[in-house]
Picture 1 (tube, rainbow, N blue to C red):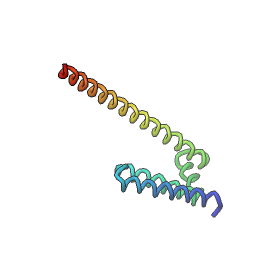
Picture 2 (picture 1 turned 90 degrees about the vertical axis):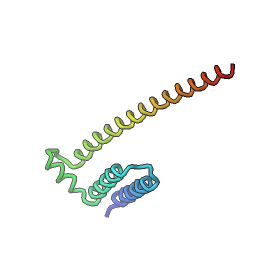
Picture 3 (picture 1 turned 135 degrees about the horizontal axis):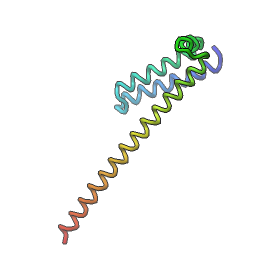
Picture 4 (picture 1 turned 45 degrees about the horizontal axis):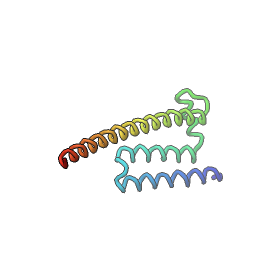
Length: 114
């Protein structure tokens, strides 16, 4: 095993344990636990058996395994950016709704004091 494989495996297992910890704390849904664990298991397989990425790449019509991993990473990151954007939009909408409700409540309270 090369040094880079060892370093990557340590990182993968550290993140994997973090995912499980977040699930146990109730901060992660079961479906996302499964998705993340499968992703990290796949990453570990590719780190331990680099030829598997080339095999999969050839099956889907990509020349090199590294190119295949990069393509998947770009698509995955774009999806995560989209999800984060949508989550931020939801949070902004909820904050606006709460601020409006609080402003109305304060305005009604001030009228009753008069």
